[in-house]
Image (cartoon, rainbow, N blue to C red):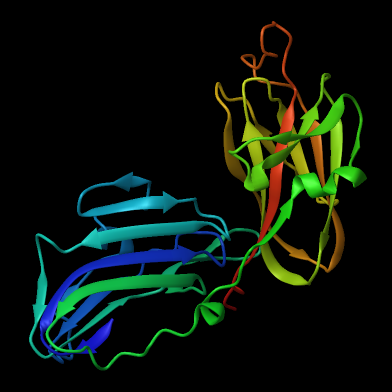
Length: 300
């Protein structure tokens, strides 16, 4: 925020999506009052400003919190808030509020290069303040289309005709908890069952976060998930005592326009996973959709 006039600053909401792995929040906060050259308020790190410490974790309090914290990988997201209700920041002529975009940087092998350097993460912030008269001295927001890009969402049930699988059956299941009120259900009944889900990408992605939105339930198995021919799969236990839908991060990739495949291979089941009304183990798999989110380029 940078504005001229008389008023009081009362809150901040900060969101970010990471362009690379690591900790994003070493940036200090600075608040300049009434045109001063040195800020009256100098913070010691992003998490300190939002009243957390040693990184972030999900929590919500009356005047501060972190309602979204997905982790430290490229493509992960965070949202934090702080209200200055008990400590309002008053100004008579002007105010400028800044938070640096600094954190850790890594090389191609994941080794930490530095813990305090400018990063290329995507930031979105909202400043809350009261002010006499009409605010001046700040730049209007650009249109939404210039600030955001919609994620590509591929509904799994639309790919049902081209699916390949080994044991069991594949059906489209209806339910209000899923996107489009449908999911693809693989009724696998043996361990080592496999399913290949082909999907088509309409454009080239230089760096894209890939997520599989999957279902967990009482009769679901443990699966390895592999994108195309990537050597290292992601393993996820999809057992849950109740039905829930969750995003599973498959990492950041470069995807060319054209056809791709998600491959699922069963590697067993949770000891508690049982077919309803029996003691038979559950190996089911539910796929809601594939989500592709383009992320910023890393700084060189």
